[in-house]
Length: 180
Image (cartoon, rainbow, N blue to C red; front, top):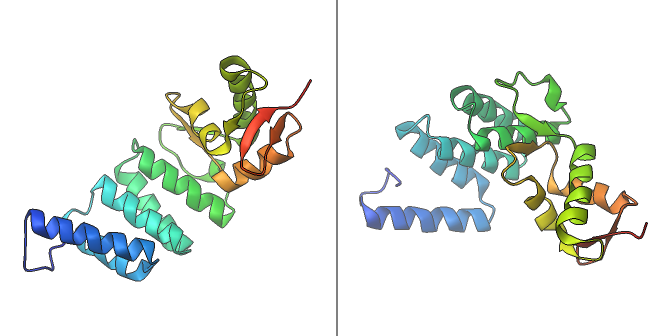
């Protein structure tokens, strides 16, 4: 709920959501940041709001700000997948090795080479050599329920899977295994 409105309750929440949605789709990042900061004044440790602010900083290219909020978010919510994912994204954007970050509890961060091995096995065991699976599904399905974090973006994943000879990737993004 936006607290700078004069209306409160369900109506204000719906209005706030609509406004923030419009800002997002029009890439009005500064206005979105302002909304998040206002909400964080009321709930400074809210996991979702911290994730949202970090994500907006990432989307807007403000990587240092994203790193600052990501560190704060992770400090108070080290168990939050949202905090870990935002930190991984910003570290990648800044070109900083994820191994150098002072992680608590050692989250399982998967390197791209290991992820491609898992994807290869996943297609072989679950789908079969000739079955086509969309790239976006392969970025998530094989790692679901494994408590793993991907230490790379979807763009990097696509780039590497397209260059890996074990896979054939169509223009549309459908992936199958190459012939042995």
